[in-house]
Image (cartoon, rainbow, N blue to C red):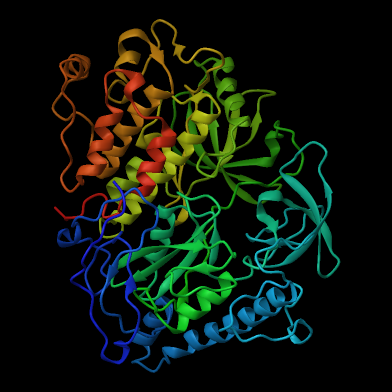
Length: 582
């Protein structure tokens, strides 16, 4: 599927903007009512599928901007009987962006690359931010992209946006770096909490490497005119604008020409990205709406507490609290890591289980680091009872979460966002040659902001030279999630994980229903061998179900790789699951 031209009947011409250029309108990703309802209407499914990250679709007319505050401000306005000035936040942001744009213009002019004659130029000497070069890393300067609270006197607390310089790198634990802040304070911080400073990082609208699904999830919390700028997934090195209007999310690719100028519409080109964003914050000129409200940046905060790379933790540092549930090898508890005053999860070992098998799970987790994998923090193995200590996920397993949360909260966008996170984690495992062998909604955990992480690595294995792993005779597997080759020959590969992922996808689409309803466990294999597969869940769109069916092909070699699955999920319209409430 490629570019297509769609005539959108919802386009409303604005009388005072009739002279505007035609709107470069991308395909509608999320459809909803004009009241910004979180529910997705079936009337908007339409013919809007494409696997292109961002396209331009032309239709006549323009849109009237609707100035209003952030979502929190609107709620405040309602509580205060309409006394809130809706334009205040917009004016404040526009003023700041104008200053930054002028500074970037000065820097660009200073570098001899100002080819846009329509841009006001000021000298670098009178610009308070002239030391930031446009789209170019500021050598030696880093910026804190996540907040961090120091756990001991060797660490340094960080505030988002704080400027830092790196003093030293840890000789053993490469997750940590020693930095100095602007007050001269020195301490260790997790390396993933900082990034090189560029002129884009200081802008509230720039989110960097954010997936299409995550962008749409973030923008569902916004209002008309909420937007962000992100790295394009389909065209490396290019950027995209994601913009909310009338309950829908629009994606625009930002192109660059041979002179390095930026444009969305070929009729308007700008020397810097900042100038382009500022222009479209005051004039639509091809966009469906003004770029008014940068959406808050959202990062999955890694679970990093300690600088040393020692995995063994003194048992005296762990205070056990309430029981959370049971796993393959024992029970799972919420606990407090007293040394760092952090809530953690502790998995214990049953007396009847093998210590070697228990430790193999910890060994697997030591080598895996991904935002959507449950992070190992340490182990207690010097004496029984033995512990595996991991990060704590406050909302429990995905299966229970799907069942108990209201469906008005688990919208199409949220469901697709969660599925994309699992696919991202499995793409990482695939690249590392790890097979999970027990992928299911019950083995994924949910954190705040609908963050999902894959856990329970009790059956995970590293596949080295061969492309599959053969389990021991008599090994137990979850039948309804296991691929046919696993049931028939005890043979597992990343393609058997693909099969399991599709069952998980079905679980998400059904809000946690049990697979193969009305079919006994002993009948599942014969049912599959006869060519039968589960039917499309109510409300699940055809393209999502088609992906499930590709993952359920009998021959493992014919199933897609996780890299392909992740890309396909990200490219889908997030009208996604359950577009019609049942």
